[in-house]
Image: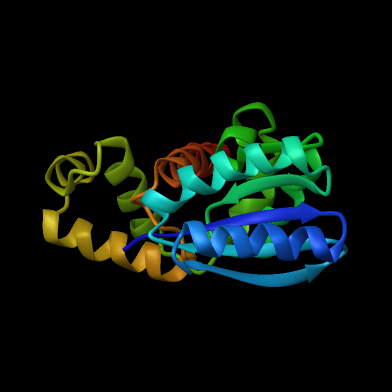
Length: 188
């Protein structure tokens, strides 16, 4: 089961409580929240494949009736390096970090720290895996590794970064991050 993360900014404790209560009912209590201060909260969604679309639609509907919910950003993992992306959103806006990276490449610079605990082989395997449509066999051909080796490296990538590669926005982010990593290698 996939896990998704949304960084949410709100005005007023009552507005947040109402929103999270409604989300809990809609998503059958597959929602957890962790306050981050300054009117912000990290929301964790279980079964993100199904719950993220419901969350986004509910966010949009509640913003019409409730001006207190300000903005929300789907982030690849609960790492604090993603929190700065919320500053780029306008009022009542809902977007993904990966989508923001398409127009704000500087966000990838801060996220490069996620790659620090990874070996080059793990990064290369995750990048190839995404680039080849999540096919371990095709990725293996591209990086000259057995498909089981690709699977093991991708599992280590996921374990060390906390990024669930079953979500499209996370796949896009890893693809963009992999491109940036390759450019860094070429620059020397």
